Length: 390
Image 1 (spheres, rainbow, N blue to C red):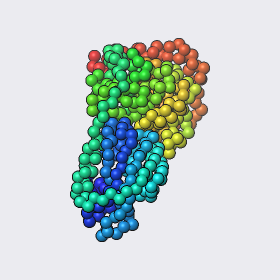
Image 2: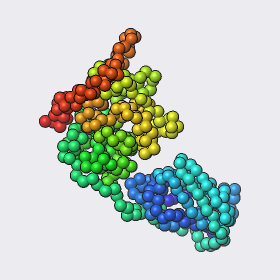
Image 3: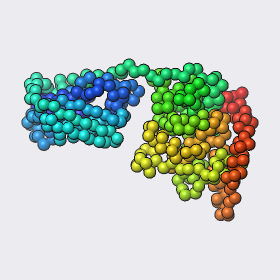
Image 4: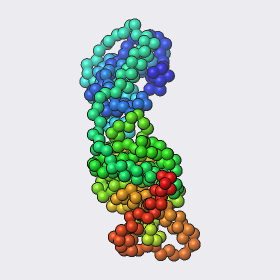
């Protein structure tokens, strides 16, 4: 931590030696990663010991040594994964009174500050250099991982499931449904509360060695330090609420986007699009979460998407893409491919400027009841052989 870092936290540089410091004891000692984003450590929980910080008063001139009270602060975090520094300093500066209790909420984080009896602890030998040095040790303490029991593995998955999942990544890439982005997952055959998907990697490069096991909170069983897809929560939350779903695809197929961004509903053009039934819902992340980066990057957003999906097989995502679900890997791959074909066919039909006769919902239901294109067994064999170079 440098002096510049401290300024970014809301502090001011003071040329005279620092003579007053405040001690903040963070309680409880383990926040399971709450402070991780503040220090860029996304992959390990935090051990919180004691963080010594200086609280500056901005109204003091630079040539005077700031004088203020020392206090003990107990911070309670409700929601993890948030930068707390922009909110911590104003809270301390404005509420640093004996016996007071202050609460600040920002980005879903409730920060409660309990102030104990004030003191006048003086450190006459505390120079700026020694303070910065001690701050480094504080940061090191924050970055120390604590031993935490990881989610239990469901055990080795069916080898055929792994083979099909690897093939699914490559098939979807070859068919233009995904490019360098997008992903597919499968529910673990041994435990419905576990699912399997690749580490963060371009789909066409995925191998069996890249596949990881996750729980329904999107927590990997053993990531081995590898990067993860930020939108794995789409998969996790769909599996949580839909027991009938055993495979999920998320893609950004260009032909599908116009139907997510306009008032033109996507509807099945022929029997190959029967899985769309009577229509496709649209998830608009802005309606629930306001202005975001459009990514479904946590459980709350994943749950909101799963709610819009409901009992459907497809949900469009405004300004983003689509999520497709199915009972098997073969089904979800087939549906994803023919969804893209349907989007192109429907766009072409709309360009004619003539009324369109879409597949009737009852016709779509009869198609599904009869086996939905034979479970895509025939095209699957060809897709998989090409994808796996057989």
